[in-house]
Length: 412
Image 1 (cartoon, rainbow, N blue to C red):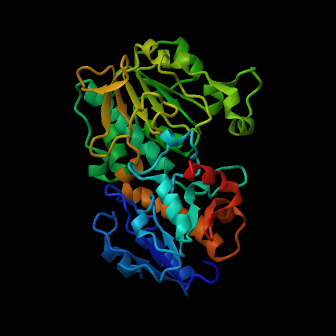
Image 2 (cartoon, one colour; image 1 turned 30 degrees about the vertical axis):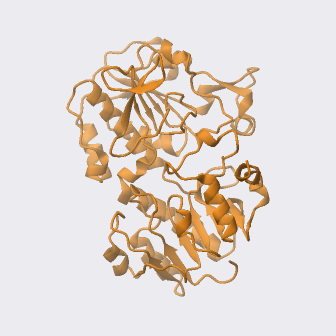
Image 3 (tube, rainbow, N blue to C red; image 1 turned 120 degrees about the horizontal axis):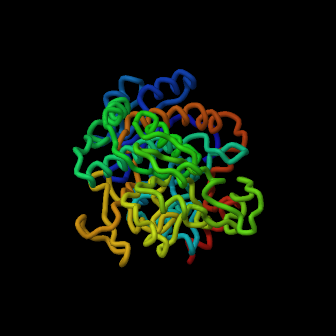
């Protein structure tokens, strides 16, 4: 897996409801132009948002067999039976957070056995590079689908509000498959009076707030949100510094919170008591405090709808007892029993789709592919500034030192 890379493959996704692609056809042209010696091969797929013919027109070859490719790009985890030995793969493996304690919080494809995936990668001598850890020195990610998760998550949550309150719901995002049209649809809705709480300050959160700018839902400060009543719909956003506090009341420092999350506790209780809707759009680590507890939910009498864009099952949002699908995005929860129920008996309506960007696959894939072209491929083909090494989980049949803790996980 060392030496010159002559060919790049784009794999057919294993997940049946995944229509995104890591690289768009227009970006195939860019890569070929930038690196004339590189051949690009694409596995044919009928569910991919881009047609096979679009890739062909841009210079790719459509082939079932990617055995001769040196570097393979996908989006989500790869079925172990499809993994080709002795290759370099780049995809979201959703494994780096895993240990014995955090298994229930694992993101990724439902039913995908992460232990089996990692064991197979090691036994097949695969070099695994994970998009999630391709980061700058300050920890920020160079690429991701987060913005579109926020955009679609916000759209779906507001649509759930319309549905729950017997208004005409909007056309589903995945059926429209066009960013401009879903924004136009939302901008034409006059939402009634409510209070919406949003948490986060990263890429996902920016997507949520991007959508809210096109609605009649006005942004207010956290202080105003708690203290004032309004005649029109409002929202407030809590940045990380607003929704957690050090247990000894030390001044907030993001770097310290990231390194020592167990020393912090959530401060969202008073905000959630005032909220009719809540959208979680924050990054969460299993060691971080939960946004609220199961006991506290009973005191949020106004809260009727949660859009969990973060979608960590049994994670920061305890009401997310399962993830949902694009086809069936919502479920209803009895907050006394914490069991799923039907709409008539549920106290809480929850949207928890775990692959939200797949509802706008063309837009989100194109943006993501720009990141691969500009922030990934040059550092694999040319000199690495450390970002690729930092995101390499396995190589030559072993975990890299930074990820050695996964050895305990796969053997647990």
